[in-house]
Length: 101
Image 1: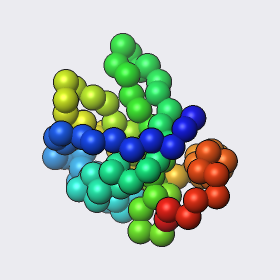
Image 2 (image 1 turned 60 degrees about the vertical axis):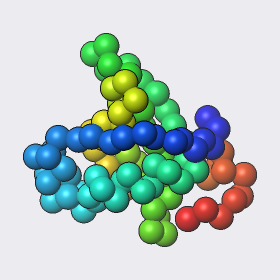
Image 3 (image 1 turned 135 degrees about the horizontal axis):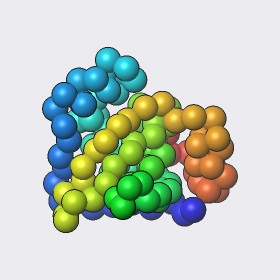
Image 4 (image 1 turned 90 degrees about the horizontal axis):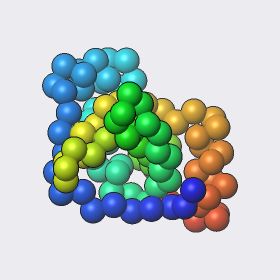
């Protein structure tokens, strides 16, 4: 894993899922958009034939994990939550001591 930055063209998400995510995790997908433009690490997986990307990003003094998939040039956000301990460790291990959050 390396630290990456992305230049996304557009974003999309399910409106109901966004509201559920805010209630469950306290993170709005609109805020997740901002975090995805920060340097972060990404882990790809294939779920049911769809490539999903788990991005561990700095956001407002903490690390969050955003799950998304690309549909053409559109980034479709699936979920956003506080980063788990192992995700935080992976981020810091690959961040080489840079203080970006």
